[in-house]
Image (cartoon, rainbow, N blue to C red; front, side, top):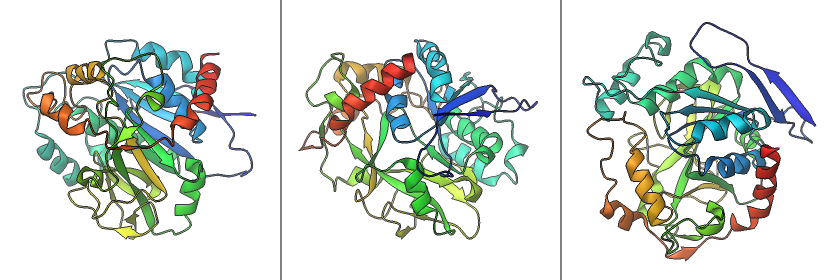
Length: 335
């Protein structure tokens, strides 16, 4: 049964419209979980990604379209009504006064209030930091939890639980402000080109669980506890803390790393390179924290990066079994 929520009009620079989603079912009042993401030239992958997260119980997406030149906007517009997507065209104008990532991070952390900054138009801060904090400023109050994630990242529940059910579980402790979700890097599985199959079908080889890069994390955040958002984690309000996927409190390092790796309950399949041809497209669009034309836009996305990330030591078939359900949801979204 469909549930309909209405986004109110306001003079604050946001996108607005009607959002249609699917009700959660058994739990009459599950926590609302919204995905916030910034995308650029991801049109080939977005339908699968959205369908996957719909099956994970996500009814609302706020997606910042960062100057895409492919069919990203057309794909999102086609499925927005059925998927509960708000699309925001997000500028990525080169700026000679642009700050480095660490300078921008420190500026964000120093602001007395997020509304003091022009997240829409001040290009000194990179597009991803601006997008995330625009969301925190104008959308966070409309949801109970927010998942800040990229289009090459698929959150996996080992028990097959929905994200609202998991958020409800973590949220039983009012001091839990956010959950740190560790990565698991997936390599190319030997593919040179896309072959028409889903991402979760094609890439099933990955790094060993204890690969040191897996201390990288992303965040599922209780919005009432969130003061402001960085790329991997947020700064939480007093009285709240991060936990890992098992619910154990953790102290993050440099706003991006956990002290240990845990894939016990909830973790992320990170398809950071895909096939070689798809990696070349990733290299062309550059890194999300930086605007087009920024000297660091393509930094590190070289052949050495591909070799480091093309990790195929072990098999992880957990999402392969979800492919039929994802395809069915993709068909539903296309109508």
